[in-house]
Amino acid sequence: MKEILAKHLYAKSSAQKIRLIANLIKGKKAILALQILQFSKKKSAFLLYKVLKSAIANSENNYGILPKYLFIKKVFIDKAVSMKRIMPRAKGKADRILKRTSHITLILSSKQR
Image (cartoon, rainbow, N blue to C red):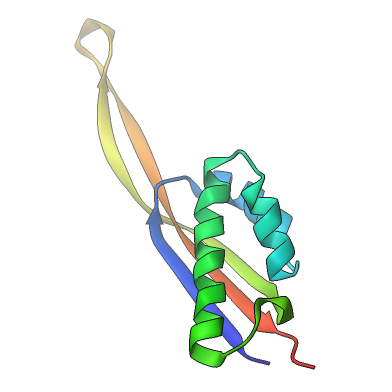
């Protein structure tokens, strides 16, 4: 059983939002997961779709494994750095806005028969 890894570092979305979609595809076959992500309207689904396509391409290019034998073994969504921004408010005050980013790590595994 080969493990294929793909990462997307500093994805411009919070980890909480990406985990909502990541939980939908954990443990599923790669082709089914692509279909689920393709028809989801969330921005984080598009980010995960790109990472999954990259992992499938890695498996075909590096190991010669066809996508029909692949399934999603693990999906890690970790917090990355937050960019700090200032939002001016009334009476000379200011609020801090955190633009959160995430690291997406996707591990595929093969079921060779």
